[in-house]
Amino acid sequence: MSASIAESSLQPLARILGYARYVFAGLLLLTIVLPIWQRVGMETVVELTGDHFPIWIEDDRGSSEGGASVGAIEKKGRDLVFHCHIVPKYGWPYCKLTFNLLKGTVGMDMSKFDYMTIDGQYSGTGNPGFSLVLAQAEDGLTRLDQWETFKVHQIDKLDLPADGKLRVPLKWFAVAPWWKDMVKPSMEHAAVNVDNVARVELLIRDDGKDGQHAFTLRRLQLHGKLITQNTLLMGLVSAWVLCAIGWLAVITLSLRTELKDRETAIALLKEVNKALELEARDLAGQAHIDPLTGVLNRQGLRAALMSTSSLLADPMAVIFIDIDHFKSINDTHGHDAGDDVLRKFANVIASGIRSSDRLVRWGGEEFLIVCPMTNVHQGRTLAENLRRALHQQVWPASLRITASFGVAQHHERDPVGVVIKQADEALYRAKRGGRDRVCAHLPGDTVAPAEAA
Image 1 (cartoon, rainbow, N blue to C red):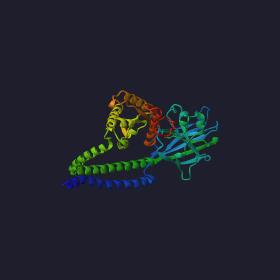
Image 2: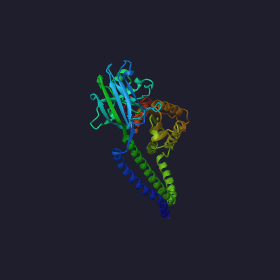
Image 3: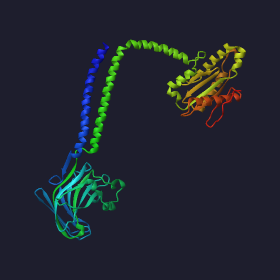
Image 4: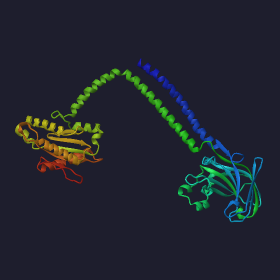
């Protein structure tokens, strides 16, 4: 019955997975087709001529040097005829045809276009070539009422081919050196940037020679892609990522549904396992506890270090303790009295440490305390407090019980065995120094282990 329930619950997910295959197949097809289409088609064209943008003529008569060149424009159907009479009255005579791209205070973003096309015809005295200028309105630099603050991108000495059709890649444009010399812009404003172009200008200069020139402009167009290659690739990558996430979500939901159905089928087994786990936990707990003192044994310390990562968090102090002259207690008062002393000793030490610390019976009359988030100086203070606390206790058979303490601090990447050995070395120094005292292993100590006195 549970199998049929699982099958019925998985049927919708199976259908979703079937649909997902079609989605991936469609996305794979788009991944192949769209880049090809973007490369050979997907074009967008902006016409500058016609009645799309305001146009005007400028010449050097308005310059401060008082030029005499004369520019004029006439319209013949859809064509613009740009007339220019160059008069070399001063060093840089010119005529300029300007297309105003500003809408309010915002220009045109040409960074999404690849190239510009010019369809025209030149007639006149000689063939002086012409210049193209993109005047950028730059944030933090340009003031609309001051022409010199517009950043000038320029290409000089362009010639029309025989058919009158010229393709000009926008990457040919560079910031004009004369503009840099005049404005001296910061590095931020000195680089090419055409994302806010206010004007496109066509200039005739003829290197200062007197002459009549006529430039018939049939079309001036910007060409780009509806979607840039980077945008298309980012879109395709995002689509693949979303599909992969959706696929993982469906797989996860499928697995969760299957697990939920299986949980219903094995409810009785869980109850049995729970009872077995309780019994195993009791047995494991007994294996980790010293039966005489009720504190951890070595196996218990190993299990605690493996299961509790915070116990090993640096700084971590280790305190090694040895009850002084314990052998004479057993020899004089018997092993029962010695056992009573060990139980009371463990209780006194346990009551003097924190709940996060771990007390371990290391063997015989030796005990170990692991103190997380404790440095060697704090560990030494704790050991001194425990040593004094032993003096204040009433012991079996009216005994006077003291202990020697060795303290060390764990250092990053060192095995735990290293800090235990260092604490053991410090303990032996305490015993050699007269017992009933605390010694600590400090950075730089090189004391070798020795036999207790």
